Length: 107
Image (cartoon, rainbow, N blue to C red; front, top):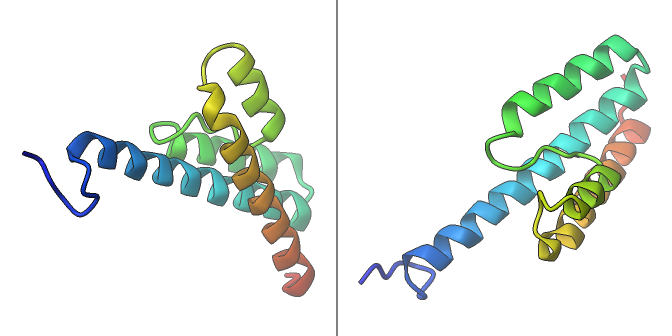
C-alpha cells in the first residue's frame, strides 16, 4: 500500500498536508496584507500587495485573506463549510500578529 509517515495511507495524508499549506498561505497572506495596510495606508501599495497575494496563493487556497470573504465564499458553495472556522481563525491570527509586529517594529 501507500503507507507513509501519516500511517493512514497516501490520500488522507495528502489532504492534511494540503490543508496545512492552505492554512499557512492564508495566515501569511493576512499577516502581510494587514502589515502593509497598517504601515503604509497607501491605496496603491495595498492594491499591489493584494494582487501579489492573489498571484502567490490562489493555487493553494482561495486567497480570500478576509474572514468576511471566506464566509461569503462558503455561502456561495466555493469553500467547504467545515473549513470556514479554521480558515477564519488563521486569518484573524495573522492579522493580530501583524498588528503586534507593527506596534513593536514600526518602520
